[in-house]
Amino acid sequence: MKKFTDIYEKIKVKVKKYFKYIIAFIIFTIAMLFGKYSYVNKILLNNSVRSLEKEKARYEEEIVETKNRLHQLKNNSGDLERFAREQYLMHKENEEIFIIQDKE
Image (cartoon, rainbow, N blue to C red; front, top):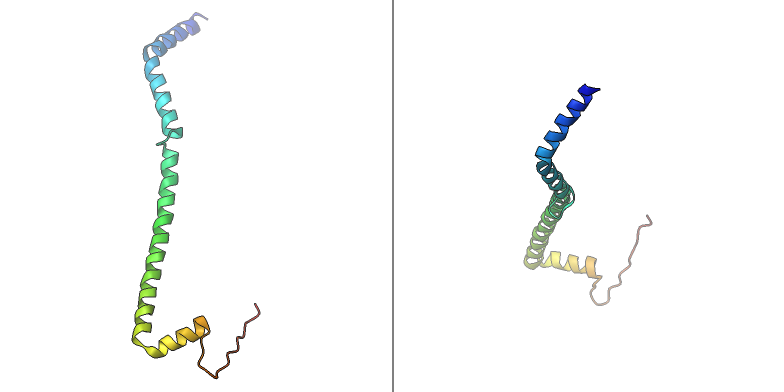
């Protein structure tokens, strides 16, 4: 029994000696896990940044395609007429338009 009390006393002395460091480590760990600048929050923000970068790339592609389409429409009147007929259902005088919709 004396052996256990000796071990307990040694542990008690060491814990008292390093108590402030243990408390500081616990507070630091809690701050890193749950604080405003926590590691978990950093991971969530990185995921958000990646998804926004993908969305940005998609919009940049759409801008390039739209600019190419606009250039094509400005330079070719046949394409412009076809675009107006398809998108805005424009027609010439004395011309009828029939819209056929697919059932899906």
